[in-house]
Image 1 (cartoon, rainbow, N blue to C red):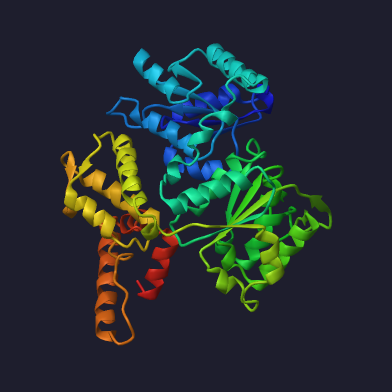
Image 2 (tube, one colour):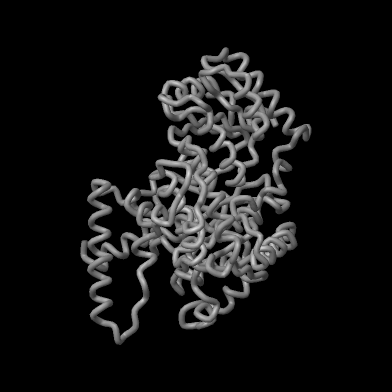
Length: 453
């Protein structure tokens, strides 16, 4: 690949660096995307594929160990990014360079750099990518399930099915409760498919309004509606040649289902404001937390659409049914967040292990992940006790029966007060509050409406 056809992503918390690289590559590369916050990487990669990533090794000015950069290098691979990665740092430490290369980086640059040297490095890497030298598409293929780590029989069945169906073009429906890792499985399927080098586009269709549904999925022409100031390709066209992942498919309306079915049957989209069909070539993966028994109700979901999206079905098990995977994942998250926050990995004492194994995890893997991140952040020593393991006060609230109205009322009061305290703690920042509570932003907003907060 030549540089003029390449999409480049630059991740650095220094705005001067971002500006310098953007100006250097302007006119040289097909596109240059800059990002100050590495926490946004997953979202960026879900919207666009990149051929090259320039990644800073230090995002905290007071700490210069390079651990943060190495952490995000690993996350790039776990997110399914197959781009070549150049690590950049202001500290020319040869040991750090070796660590970065061992972790899968393609090269290492010390800033400030010579522009000619950086351009030559980029061009050489992209040329190697075409010739097949150390092709990033083959890097860590055996480790694609690392983020979904699991040794239980139920997860081994899932992995086996993924390996079997990934190389095909079969449409896949992933079922499972919220927080079980449906999106990670979808990405793993894409990365093991023949479309791995093409885009992976994720859309939360359940969050799209009636007015946005067609525009987001099928695109629109300038002037098609108020606010359409330019022509825009929809997500189907953006995923051309690759994989389109429609999350929360069970929440779309019957009218939206009819429009989606028409596109899948005809294999073409028509942008709003035009009559011109555009042929599409995509692999479709859908996911939902709605049980199949509900989807089978034709008053809520079209049966002919189910047949279209469900050539192969994958059921993601809830965490409470994954046995020893619970402790395996807990330790994995502890290690992951210890690296992220530049701490030593804390160990779990026997009572902490017992508490982790006994909990029922209504929020599944996502809830466990947040609990372990919270434990690492708050830890002051190298060992965690049962008191250090705090699960979501909302997700963990016990379920009540119809005959326990008084108890139910008390629980609602506790839940409402908990939400108020956490929101107040974060000065009204909903994203941070939701994270501490172990909820998605959408779930927290539902509770805010419920309690009229």
